[in-house]
Amino acid sequence: MTKGLRRWLVGVWLCTVLGALAETAAILLFSGLTDNALQKGSLDAFWSPAVQWLLIAVAGAAIGYAGGSLAVWVSERFVMRLRQHVFDHVQKLPPHFFQRHRQGDLLSRLTGDVEAIEQMAVSGLIGTASALFSAVFYAAAAFWLRWDLAAATFVLAPLFWLAAKRFSAGVRSVAREGRVADGAVTSVVEESLGNLVLTQAYGRQDAERRRLSQEATAWFRAAVRSARLNQAYGQLVQVIETVCVLAVIGIGVWEISEGRMTLGQLLAFAALLSYLYPPIRSLAQLGLLVTAATAGAERLVEILDTRPAVSDPEGPTDRPSGRPDGVIEMKDVSFRYPGMDRQALQGLSFSANPGELVVITGPSGAGKSTISKLLLRFYDPDSGTVLLDGDPLHAFPLDRLREYITLLPQETLVLHDTVRANIACGRPGASDRAIVDAAKAADAHDFITALPEGYDTLIAPGTARLSGGQLQRLAIARAVLRDAPVLVLDEPTTGLDAIATRRIIEPLRRLMTGRTTIMITHDLTLTPDADRILVLDQGHITETGHHHELLALGGVYTRLYGSQNPGVTAEADLDHASGAYAYAGQVQGGAYGWSEHWAGPVA
Image (cartoon, rainbow, N blue to C red; front, side, top):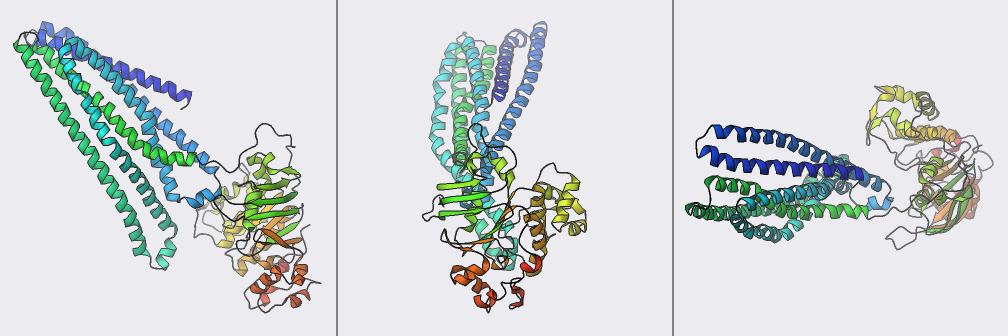
């Protein structure tokens, strides 16, 4: 908790003290008013205590309003800051963390579980202080009025604590079950909405309903158990309070009959009890509140205890702050994902220079996409070094490094915002002119202006407004605007048909010009014009060279190429190597040509 919030919390406690003092003073005035005015029927004895009581009530109301408003401000401010802190932490976590946790469950932790911590850390502190101050003042007033009655009252007070202790274990268990079930329900709803097309196309409505019903039933049972425990505790406390009040009234009646106590004193003492028992009960119930909140806190701490895979360098760095040339080197890099037995990369070494197109290909699971994760520093290698212009990547601050390396991921990522904002996220603060120029370079300007609101058209993840090829051209415009010296393309044609692919080739060519480009792809129709092709298999580079050189080897690359182009032999393809490479679209009408749209290598 920050110093500012602590200061405001002290203010809440001060208001609580003053409010308790005001209520105590009002009760004592009631005692005198009863004995001097009501019993004697004296109107003259009424006015002075009545005015004092009214003034105290007004002051108490003002203090109560200030304290209540301040308490809400402190608690909500705490929730806001805690949620921001957890959200900032989550954004630094590695990709495998999100693969192991359902998004709906993470959403539940960032909302409901954050509020649970607030109940424990802020509302609990405020409630404890308020209950303690009130109990102390009311107890002092009760002892001042009649110490013997007060002593009898406090003899029974531990019953509240015993009741709370009896219920605390069950409350904690059921609270955790409820938080987990709530996260599961949110996950099922989020997943079902995200896969709505699959659900409808395959008639999975009943299956999804059963999934939701199963998780909702678990939540329902936990909620009912929690309600029963709270109801049982509340009713038991009412019985304990009744016993205490009857004991006091019985002793008070006997004291009045012996002439040792006035009616006003008894009524005032009864009023003090009505104020005293709620704080005592609250202190006991706060234990249950903290116990229930602990279940949510434990789930949130699981996230906060997960450490980011990478971090910024400590202290100042001595590397130049200017824009790098973009020379990428991997030297003897090995890496294994956390929790996995097999290494994703083993002893990997290669380099890529400005103006070069290096294509990395290989069978599925060979480790191709892992290279992009290391280049963007989502992870650091277990051994070996990744260098940019001769400096290890961990020597760069993360935000600066990611300004130098642009990633076009396999899935085109879209913000729930306007087309303009989606392009501008490549370079925040870019002018409208720069955004339009980037869209033109990506061959996206024409279809954007044809949208209902043009650049101000709202789009969202999974939008049906734009085709896959149009979304990919938006991503290219975003990369053009970012203007980084290193470009990483991760499966740039995934999910695109031949026509859509041909439309993005020329924008990609313009984007790649003059940059260090590393293209990760399984699509070998994109490889003939690469300056170098690296064939990855089980984390190793097994082959390297130009397209025709690799075909001549008759190895992994040849087999992959043949599987994608049935009917075209390596010898037949090599016959065309002296000119433009074979247009694969002539083979069974299913592929498309890269070289046909790209006149020569990148300058």
